[in-house]
Image 1 (cartoon, one colour):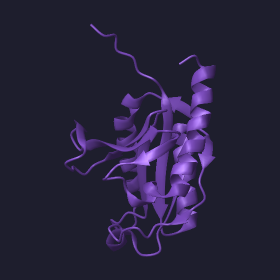
Image 2 (cartoon, one colour):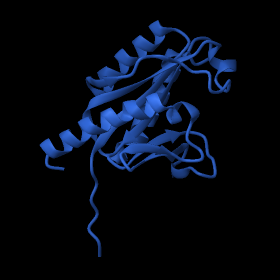
Image 3 (cartoon, helix red, strand yellow):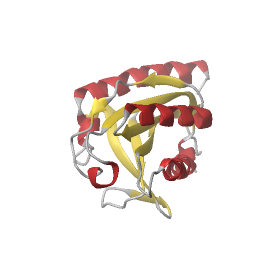
Length: 176
């Protein structure tokens, strides 16, 4: 029988809001929960879809936040529940003003979580699904047919590649 092993990875968080001040406040709250930031992407205009606009308004911005401390992948479910609670706590008049999407970056892939089911998503627990979003092949993160358009952007994949280099160094330092 094969021995079960689990490697740590980087907690990556997509943070989206219409106001940069809301985004900054959300990042501060996330740091209190998950520790210091290791990498922080520049905010970018999130215009790949209008899906969030009815609830969150137009002019959405997004950035990726990667935390210093490594996590095991089985923490993703509890982290998704925590971020869902934070979204509700920050809501105004019953509408989200920030969207928090946690993911797990390993040397091999990026897995995101979602409360929405889809054919390519795997049920993990009631209300939580996991999605293999990017795979690392031939020196870069490669898109899959369902990869979100903003994660498919070269600048996003390049950013995650830099985070991966740090992850590999951390795994070596921690003998993982």
